[in-house]
Image (cartoon, rainbow, N blue to C red; front, side):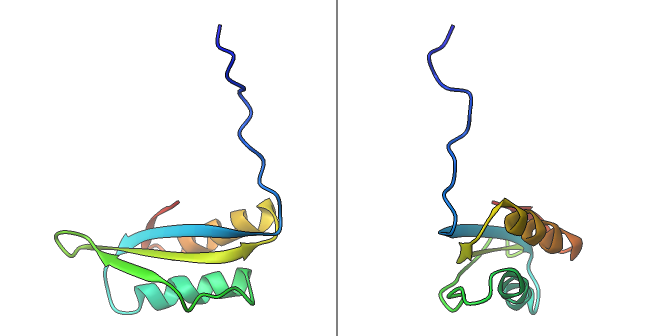
Length: 91
């Protein structure tokens, strides 16, 4: 038997929360991610983002940091990003 706790660590809200969104490269993908993030976390500094192309140029990784206020906000943000049909993964 392991002594490692099975509960994931709790996040204390509000907090700065890093998000990485991976999706299909194309015009406006990073802008779309920032726009959706701003809808869910107004006032977050979304000006500081990192956009990285995949090796073959097919995908983009967009990294930004929001002010997270609770799990419901994060779930809604994830759902709206996935609903675009252009997002493959949200980390």
